[in-house]
Length: 324
Image 1 (tube, rainbow, N blue to C red):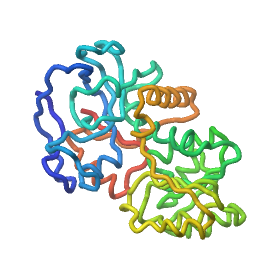
Image 2 (cartoon, rainbow, N blue to C red):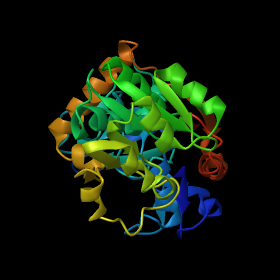
Image 3 (cartoon, rainbow, N blue to C red):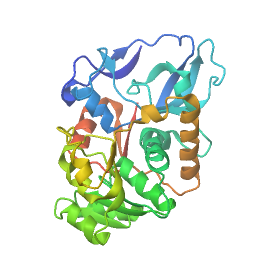
Image 4 (cartoon, one colour):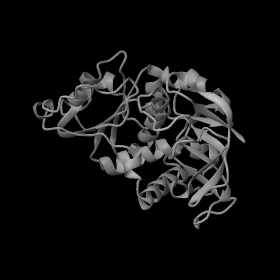
């Protein structure tokens, strides 16, 4: 038996229960992983609350972890006992140990620690597909990134700066705006004291931006659309303030024939070769120093409920990890 954080029904943070779970020998195509660090992400709160329904309960929470392979099932040739690995899917990382499909794990390079990996796999690979695939960001790009002082946002500011882009980052306080600018944002907007649409128009000379990256959802829609150039792209990839409702598709024409996408990491890394390529580029920019992963909060895994409260109250910044 090992300890894990499970939910027996979806709801508030109080539904997170620290309890014994049985982890047997890994099955065909599986590895058993002993976690050294586990990541906290907003998707965890969606799965806990019921915003994202779960197929089966009880369920061990968590999408992201890093650790050591302690057993290998039949049919697995890429990994062996003792290998250092990390992953950002499937669910079940809030645990001391777990079995998982080997196809979803990647080997850690020597320059990436367990803590760094657990803090960056989901967020860092998200940034990679957003900036390198959903919209190919480069020196000619002007972009707006909401929640720029969050875990994804701080990585995105650094990576977009590395790519030569002009970055406008929003955050909810002057302190968080300063963090975003320190990470590489060219301009910062406190959306609690400034109208971000007006500021974007001012910064861009009325032109608007090429692409908006929005993980906030309800609170920033439809204003985000008003920040775009004609033929610009609205990338909605999260729902921190609640899901967007009653999306006005017809209005996209009047605002400049805009494009909209709702991407997920799991689509972009569904194929093994895409997962490996994504992780390899992430490791490369981190090991080069172009992107630094800041673990700003560390909690014992047993305190997962408090970590969820802090995340949803927007008192956390950067990346957060658990120690099992």
